[in-house]
Length: 165
Image (cartoon, rainbow, N blue to C red; front, side, top):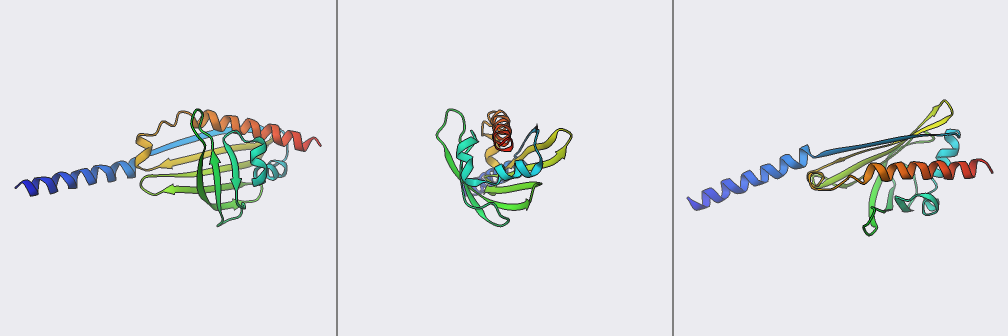
């Protein structure tokens, strides 16, 4: 009887964790228009070595931005030590999209996209990310959108600095 109760309870706990893993989802979305052509924005965005010079969130990138490649990115969350994460470049459209995916399925994954579109006045740049998994229920992600806004502003400043030369 006790064994049966234990197995039943354990099964319910596993089901609860599985439900949390499959239903956990957070979406982040920030945009900016940079007064420069998509090619100028793309040149900065895909210069992995240059991230340390301008990006306050993704402070270091090691690897090559090409479809199928793995890159290691150092992420700076305010008030916490930097963390290195790996992601795969799952989609790369020159001057259009840089899509990275990483994490541990079921626990937490991220699907991060930089999207570039020609727009009136320059290039509309969007960072769009969807995080999924069990851990998103417990993770304080309030810092993400403000940090991505700062990264977009830093990208604009870097592009304008290079584009004016």
